[in-house]
Amino acid sequence: MAGVAAASGLRAPAFASPPRLAGAVRTIRWLAPGRALVSVRRDRQRKAVVEDMVEGVVVANRMAGDGADALRIRLREAVMVVSK
Image (cartoon, rainbow, N blue to C red):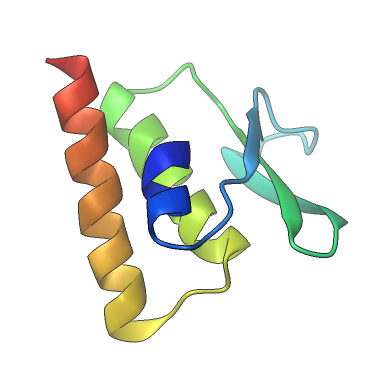
C-alpha cells in the first residue's frame, strides 16, 4: 500500500493494531501535519482488515470522489498481487 500511495504522490499512513479506543475496529490518529496512524483490529476476516487499511490510506490523504475511488481500486489490486 505504501508503494501505491507513493506512486500516486500521496503519503501512506503508519499502521498499528489494535486501536486504542475500546470496541473500535478502526481508528485514525493525526500525528503531525500530513502524518497519520491507522489502527485496525486484526482478529477479523482478512477482507475486512484490508478494507480498513485501504480506507485508512484514503482518509489519511483526505481523498474524496473519483480520485478516492481510483485509489481504492489500485490499493486493493496491490494487496491481491502481493497475497498471490
